[in-house]
Each structure stands twice: as structure tokens, then as C-alpha cells.
Amino acid sequence: MFTGIIETIGRVEKVVPKGNYRQITICPEQPFSDLTIGESIAVSGPCLTVTAFEARSFTVEASQETLTVTTLAALSPGGRVNLERALRADSRLGGHMVTGHVDVVARVRAVAPVGRSLHVETELPRPYRALVVDKGSIALDGISLTVVAVADDRFAVNIIPETRRRTTWVDLKTGDRVNIEFDLIGKYLRRFLETTDGGSKLTLDSLREMGY
Image 1 (tube, helix red, strand yellow):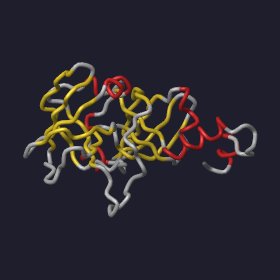
Image 2: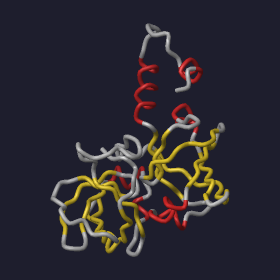
Image 3: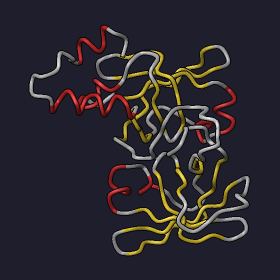
């Protein structure tokens, strides 16, 4: 489990194909001093497992499924990624509950300055439209963000200067592909409503009316 608060940026050192998966070695800008084999790290969104580490780098493995449903298949040496280690039980939950399980990849449709911030519009694929609400939480490339506007086929977030400085989004531009993880509670609610045989009075419309 993660919070969507990026700890540091990493530079991809090498990508090694291994059959139907890839080994990815990453050098964090701020090295992690107490890594262990088997721990989880979110790499621009997807949760990956540490399989090896050295003083200033670590290696993770991305399965075929991860490569198919995220942007990690496009990683190459020199690329930059957002890094967050798994949440500890005694840590502050500064963002929102993020699992590291990416739901879909979508393209950035527009990037525009608003004061000192950036207003970013992203595609919203039809199957996921019920999962995005105004002022709700969403994770983009592993970053916990607040939705500021929703339309049928898009949604928008605002990026403050501090977030840009601490993440790979300092270079974000129109057309970029981003990993999206929708709010976990919303996904469970949708599943509940889809599988309830008329026994509940809750509907997607009634939940929206109540502000969910």
C-alpha cells in the first residue's frame, strides 16, 4: 500500500528482457539506505518487487501483465520515474490509499498554466467514467492528486510547483501517456452495485447525489 506522495525520482540504469518479463535497474536521486529483498516500491504507479540492490541502485521485475497495462514497457536507460516505498504502519497518510495496481493508461490532452500551477486535462476512457468525481482522489504516475473538473471523456487536476519539482511531471506535455489508478473505495462500490441483485437501494446516481 502507498500514499501517492513521491519520495524521490529515479533514473533507469538498464532494462534487461528476461523471457516474458523485464528486469529494470533504477538509481534513485536520493538513495534508499535500508532496502530489503522482496519489498515493494511503486515505480511511476505500478507496485514492483525489489529483487536485488546495491549501494546506489536497486532492481525490480516487471511481468508481462504489468508491461501490457502500464507505461513501463516504454522505459529505457536514462528515463526518469517516480519512486515511493510502501507505506509503514507508523507513517502519516499524506495523500490517499494507493495500491500500485494501475487500472488504465491514458493520454494527457492539455497542459496549461494557471497562476503558478499547471492545469492538466487527461483522457477518461468510457469504462472508468463512474470512478472519477469532482474533488475526489486519483493517482497519476503514482502521484496522489485531487480531481478539479470532470467531463464525459476527460478530467482535470492541478499540479502545484512543489509537486512538479519533486516528480517527473516537471517535463509533462500534451500527448504524454500516464498510468492511472482510480480510487480504491470507488472501485469496490462500483463492483458492489454491479453484483447486487436488486437488494440494495444504492445506485450510482444516488451515490453521486450524496456527493460520492
